[in-house]
Image 1 (cartoon, rainbow, N blue to C red):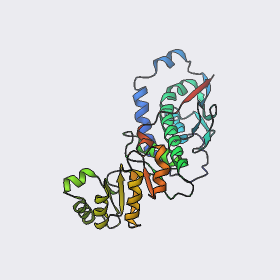
Image 2: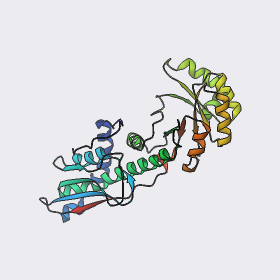
Image 3: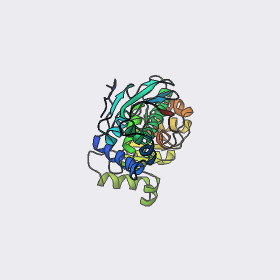
Image 4: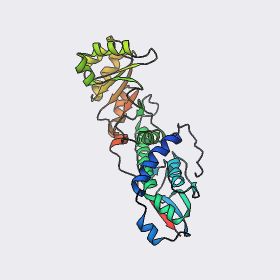
Length: 291
């Protein structure tokens, strides 16, 4: 595996076992029948160097993934990390390079790029949201569970690299009462009461509300965190005043880049944004090959 750049900030890495599981699935998808083009055109002893180059400005992300893809294809390949994760780079900058068997590089090229193009896009989008927060704001930019199946760890790492934070990682990680839970239980108070009785004493209770009346119910029932769903900035400001610090407030639903400042100024602690992971367009990165 190649050299990892030393990060200037603390970002929890992706566990190697998680990396290998996802990468092996992707490589098998591409290579289960071999690579007829590479095997036909490239001699076994051909060597090359290839550089992954940003075609547009972006936030670099995915050095460990890039390195591990090529090490899984061929352990003799040497990967060099030229830009650390989290760095903002301009178009034309080489992010990573790989050296060794030309056949092996070509076999791993598409899988490596597929991963890092998406991760860089998420990190870049997250960074834009973080930078849109007003100076001194207490609000944090947070992702959601709207992730690509099988790639949540990769995408959530990219959010962290971009400066955001992660919401609950899975359904067992935290209590979050949504609108359908409330409908099935018969009300906000009933849902919170059941969750409080069932959850471990170490677990906080979060409840989604879509009106100020539901907010009052959630506060009376003792919710620790309240998710304000699809509310205007004016309504959010009223919710903050009514809450008066009795619960953490999270704004979600329709949180566009243009709305970050007004929602943060309204006083919520968390802005959760599905668009960080579910609607990003892959970053433009090419692998420039030199034989």
